Length: 159
Image (cartoon, rainbow, N blue to C red; front, top):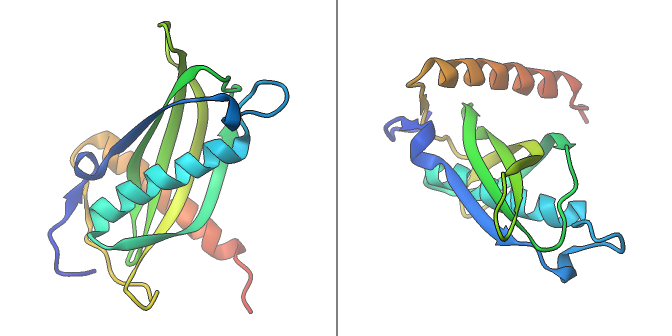
């Protein structure tokens, strides 16, 4: 780990809100999955970079679940928080909710786990601060993230 003090889940949490417009949509009026994933990647970057205090790159998308379609004209909230921090990598959980612009309940649309890696100017991984686990929920999510990270390592192909 680096010498920076531990950061909390709350300190790096990020949220981006977007109105979905016709250029975001496919021919059925649903927003392209790729448009959603692009915003998921951006908000994951903000969260990881806030924590690492460094530039971060996307290492993997894990468990992207499209739960309900997002439609043109809906307001979409992309909220990200850290679940696990390793030596140079961080797992970011992103929840995407959508609601009608004129009101109504927010509905869960997408959930994803994104692994981000902190890098230096040459693109080499650099250590990140530890994650301070404040609540029981933080500790539970951290353990779940550790298990997902280990599973990814086991299934990664070696050259």
